Image (tube, rainbow, N blue to C red; front, side, top):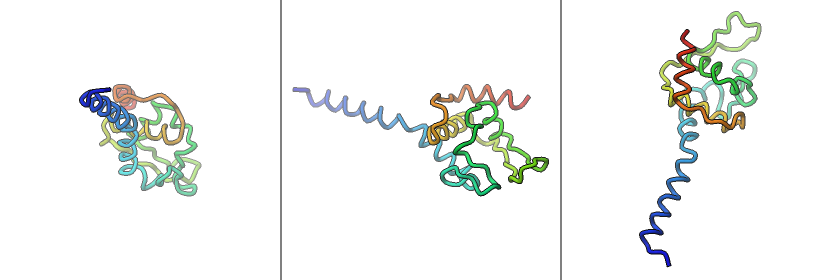
Length: 129
């Protein structure tokens, strides 16, 4: 028979592992809701032809391009497509950007790798050059 203290310890460790597993995605979802959802909609479907969908977007595969796009936005006035410009967001920390991108990739089954805040910092430095 397992002593109560060992059983309790195993239970606590198991709970900690389960709760940490999706924490990045939950935090990324919050970043998405606060910063992206107004335009890209709740499920990333975009809005008609004015706001691009995130669901099937190839940009989610490209770390550098995606991070720079989120940070600097995009001006579409010279674009042949009739899409709305996207404002940049210079308030998101590397951790928030990492959580956001990991959430999007998890949500849309894009890229199974995890993007770390250190990697985001590296890409942000390249965006500003």
